[in-house]
Length: 95
Image (cartoon, rainbow, N blue to C red; front, side):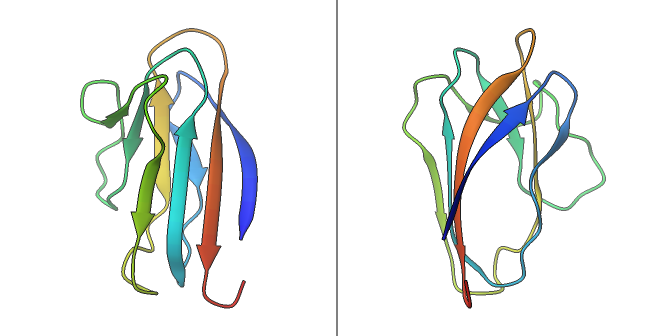
């Protein structure tokens, strides 16, 4: 299992890399600004108008799955100014 601090900006970027054997993922928005996530693998880029909203101060976003069922990279953006930070914990089979 790994824990990392991830920088989020106002430009959409990859927050969590794709992982073939992921079984658990937790994303916590510790910033003062809402975060918007894209969980699917479509070509549509994440934005503040189409992303899954993880509000500042909300409980962490948690995904649990069977290995190989949720392998996508996660992209994100925030709707404020400057850089913000999230915390990501991820576990995969074989870690």
